[in-house]
Image 1 (spheres, helix red, strand yellow):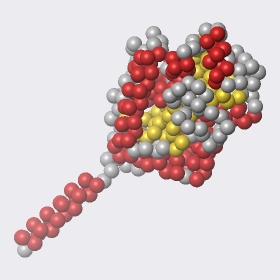
Image 2 (image 1 turned 90 degrees about the horizontal axis):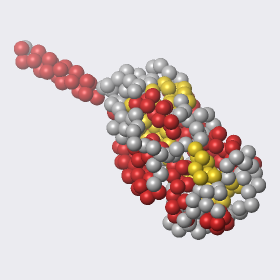
Image 3 (image 1 turned 180 degrees about the vertical axis):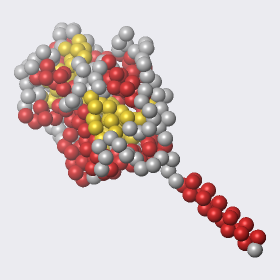
Image 4 (image 1 turned 135 degrees about the vertical axis):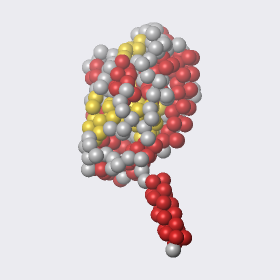
Length: 325
């Protein structure tokens, strides 16, 4: 009888231990609203993709995911907000590739893009497009290079902020085409495009999602895309390399992060939703319309990718001398 009771007790304890091992470290997530911090003003590509993610996760979970725009300091204000937040999954960051560029450009930064965050998922890869006002007489990349060589600093190129991929795309263009243009940074893509359309600046290497509506309605003309090959949504627009700047290729990308120490089960849960979102026909169609290539990577894959991108952009900064302070 005693042995029988010992067997029952040992079996119960084993079952309890097994249940504890497989149980998630947290209760149901989310059980309250989640903030998605977008470190740029509304209307730009990061904001567009952030709102898509928020809408999908709201639909998926039945809980509210709220986009909160916190712009300034080339996105570092919003990023720091997330870095200082509790690692509980209720404050997340949606940012562009500039997230891994900060240390290359600034002598002092309030955050470490690798050490202070938990990578969750790369959402999408997005081409950049070289756009100008239709009022500009320049009709091709070759004409732009010739005119810029003839008159250094004549052309002013806008960007969504110091250090962002559109800024470094312009710096790389200067370096590889042998020209010198003035960089005019803005607090986000939307205000930069407003000034470009208004004629206050001359050109911009912009993320395709934010420029595409203006290309379609004729308020901007596309001279080239920055990818290694032409893109389906602009089949008649050559790549910068095709147009004469040999080996030129730069893209931007967007991802989602949590604060350092975000538990793996929460990171995996959000990552899974991002993978599902980019494969959902409704959302995939929206991404295709924007010219964005869906990714939806795992936390581990995203960690490896962002480390590689940090090294690549650091090399561009070093070669171009694009230090900002």
